[in-house]
Image (cartoon, rainbow, N blue to C red):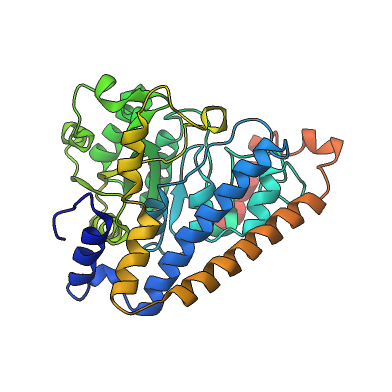
Length: 360
């Protein structure tokens, strides 16, 4: 890739010039799908902000605006039987993985037709059909789970891969180091992706980490590591493709730092985030909006025009409005749902019976 510039037009031109040489780009229809995925996430999150302000979404709500190239680029290289596990900033990743806007919005509204039955909410999206294993609210708490998924894949002799998204503040937790040590020691097929959006809540990376190239922490566990530009969907695809292929064929984990930037605050309670970053900093990063970069490069290549883009945006806005209407009309979970999905009805006798049946 050409050296990145702050000027949006120059960057888009550089992207277009390298288009033929970049195998991660696919064909025109594929690039249009990437653009559609990112725009769907953006419009969905914008309506989530509106719904939260109106009180339709309760609790916490962490938006993904600005980071869409990470989710889209990463999940576009996976197979349906691969696994995805992530943090509380999970709406965009859920949509990129193939979960329906209706089921995600209904979950955010706390309704019965939500993907987690209305009981998980914004931070706890889960979908067995797409192997999307959450949505976890505890910082770093999901990283050992991803390592366990990698161990299960290896134990069963499969060739799936587990993608584990996390924010950069996770690297300062004990669970992160314990989990990566196990993965490095046991050679597990997990790709650990640090979405470095510069701020853990309101604390800049430079104030929280002794090293600023945090992918280098992978050296402590003897695992491959790399860093890439998270505003360029094709750079993300290239880096993640290499890591996924390594995990699938060699059963080797990778620590990948994807440098991105969130345009909103940490959560809806911090929507403006003017106290810990300047307006000038935000405006500079807005010049490299991943959606604008892709759209501009495709327009320069003659692959889309303004009319096509306007029609896409109109269709997506209708799809998101449909999700809102569906969620609004969905009933709330019944009172007895409080007692469901709490405990697994299993005893040691059941386990022994299952083993006997399997060996018969």
